[in-house]
Amino acid sequence: MYRLKVPTGRNLAARTVGAQATEVAIRAGVLNRMTSLARPQSVRIA
Image 1 (cartoon, rainbow, N blue to C red):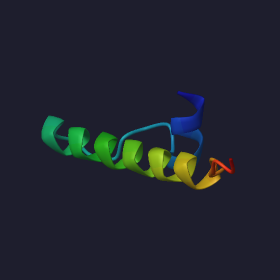
Image 2: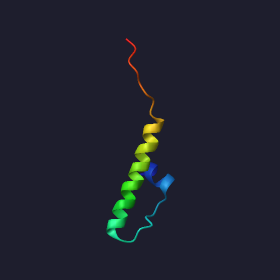
Image 3: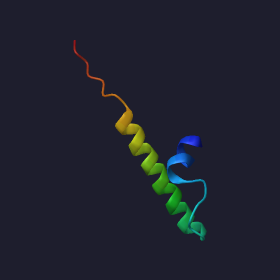
């Protein structure tokens, strides 16, 4: 939860449940994108 809340904030800005679900999905997408950018690319040599 720390990794999710620090870059995106502690509270949701949306008021309705549907909008909150969209906001959480966007936050999770941002977190996944940041994680994938930081992950090293492994290449098999032999």
